[in-house]
Image (cartoon, rainbow, N blue to C red; front, side, top):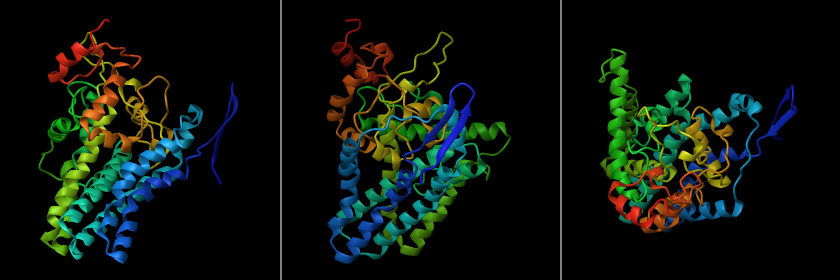
Length: 394
């Protein structure tokens, strides 16, 4: 039975709401477990092709289902959001996901360490494992935005799986501060390929995360090389966890774990790339950027990919109001909308000419831009190219 949230409003009367996706959110737990089914089938048949099937599911089945099932633009009534956010069912789902990511990587590592796989199968398995550990970064993203000690700790713990311990402080205090500006290494620019972006983003966010943590510790009169460093706490767990896997299964799993880590990072890079492509916050007279608004992020309301990503695709509301929990994120009218969910857009982004063909005109046609390049975050090397293509005013 679906839970009903309700309240009596002095002017509106009885307000009630049912989250029709309440039990669909279980997909955020079950989806990262799905590769284990294919590992079982491989063990039964010995057919290595089966191990590659999760890639087909991610980049073919999920995008097609997004298109077939469609979008959900429903918003919970604001009067009931406090009740919705106080419902511990939604938090427990994120809590359960944390140990699950550790378990999944252990199974993948066992597969590499105990089975005689071909080189191509090992590479494919590392990529698949990294893709699903990338979902762990998404779990950390949801947890890390919350102000409870347990959620902050769980975020650091799950970031140990893909060895990305600097993410929480960098994302919260760096990316959210400078998002959709030329100063943000995690905001992609019009005309910038995902591969050029990856070089700028991965190195830039790493440096910024360390600088932010260094500044935080300095203000608290604490040494950066101490247990107070939240980045080192997560990296320490990575060393213990992945180090234990190497000790137990042998050095044969080291290349697998390295590729797994890099591909997990690349999943975050892929998300960052599509979430703010070409969007720009204007600088005010005082030199500061305007407040981040819903139209500074690309949004997607596709049901299937949203329920496996804890509503990450309602990114417009998340950046405008980052403290809101995933179950209460809203849709807005007249905001940038992606033509498919994240998995489909990742695949398009991996082919730069196709991405530019699909997205560049969408950026310029947005209601708040309408061809005005001064309102677009443009790759500096492509400025002349776009100025020639889109002279403004017409």
